[in-house]
Length: 83
Image (cartoon, rainbow, N blue to C red; front, side, top):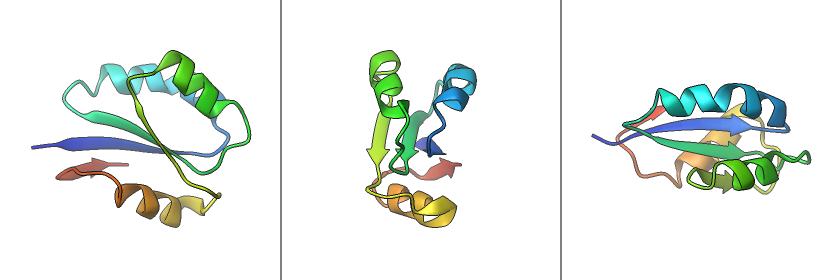
């Protein structure tokens, strides 16, 4: 069984800094993926510098919650998704 933990992000670097370590430590059997809705803060740079093992899906616009997740989930091969 393959599970993906998918976090939709838009300019949430501060939230990623605060909560991502805990998500990772509690998701050892799952792939953690950040789906970014075209952030203009340093979210992507932060992830690349501190979490190079995490997959980042970059949407080319801020598509909101539903479309942002739908675009990302189409690119992930997993049986289960945790959003």
